[in-house]
Length: 242
Image 1 (cartoon, helix red, strand yellow):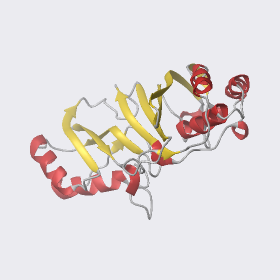
Image 2: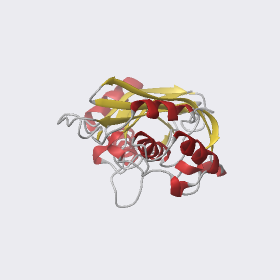
Image 3: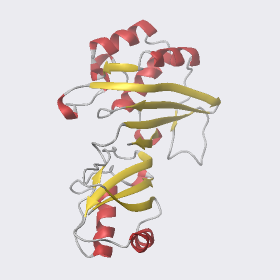
Image 4: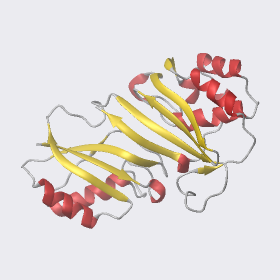
């Protein structure tokens, strides 16, 4: 039987989701907990890969198990074993063709920037106090929307063999003057894409890149002309739709 897990985690203490040698990851911690409870090894498949220090307010994974499990009992046991920076909200059976990664239709991310130091948000936002033009930031987001080759914002080779993504939402939220948020929703995201987009947005906001140059960058796909990859602490995976 195939089971779906819906969870969230604070990525501060982890080297991302996916298991890797000599580094603690979220997948490893959950798999070990499930192994302890179910007394059989479990191979989790996540909805994506998050980098070291990236957070997930919403994350989905699935695994196959040879027999039926007691969902409520397993969930209760899982929550008692897991550290408090990983929370599993439910475990439920799904159809055999459900896939946490490939069945997803959209993913949504937020990037949080603090304009004023805040001791309680330091692990979940990036403090950046340089002068930024909000109007230019908002205007440059328009060019991110729609279907484009996002090669300029990708680190390394893309999974799936191409750089094409469809961006359904790209907009800044300035409702809190001390805490700005970039909202992005797309059918897929490339490696390091959100952090590179934010770094490039900052160039526009500082007046170091014009709106036209930003538009040309998307068209040419020249990563060397894009901005820095901003720190992982401000990045949150917030929603997965199936």
